[in-house]
Amino acid sequence: MLHTVKELTGLGVRARDGELGKVKDAYFDDQRWAMRHLVVDAGSWLTDRKVLISPRAVRGVDWKSEVIDVDLTKQQVKDSPGIDTDRPVSRQHELDYHHYYGYPNYWEGANLWGVTMLPYPWVGTSVDPLVPPSTPVDPAVAREVQGRIDEEIRNADVHLRSCDEVSGYEILATDGSIGEVDDFVFDDESFAIRNVIVDTRKWLPGKHVLLAPEDIDHVSWDDHEVYVKLTREAVKNAPEYDPSNPAWGTGLPRAMGAAPTP
Picture 1: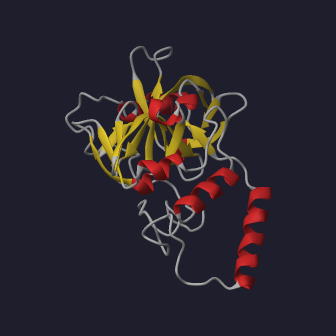
Picture 2: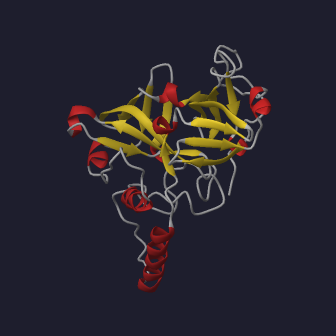
């Protein structure tokens, strides 16, 4: 089913042993266009700390009850690596996070989630992320892997961004400004971002249109601008976002295919 990040924001998050908090934001990666982490405000039980929850932990989203169930315990979340949600998430932090939970790295492999298209929880690791794999690791292999990780950290660019931060970025067509980012449409099974919702009210009063990730050339994080490969006229003629349409959430016209792969 298709939903927006604004719909996601505010949903409660429930661990196996109790309430974790509420979704405040989501981080997406601007290479494969998928939501990689939910930012959850854990509230007073965790001294007002915000934590990251990977879609790999999500076991179901009840949109009517406004609850996301995750296959984690509160203690696991409490002991997870901390994060400064006011800054971009670094590759080092992601590596620490994935190592803690035992998640495979989504950036290693050709598919949306690395070796798979869906955010399956653990591949080749213990079913309990706090229990190490039982198979011993060859020291030479471990050194090789660590060397590759160190090089990756040195060379990696930051590709994770806050959906909340990007909302409001100016949309620049090939022939000029045409709107600003209003929201994101995502698939709640794969967590792929299917569309960016563009508010064109300054140019086309009252109209919101849908652009696909493949329509986007690049994002200038320093300038808060999104450059698209389309003319202003093409953006104007893009499918209109209309949540009152009965088809909404079950499929939309034009650019609703799978997120692009590298």
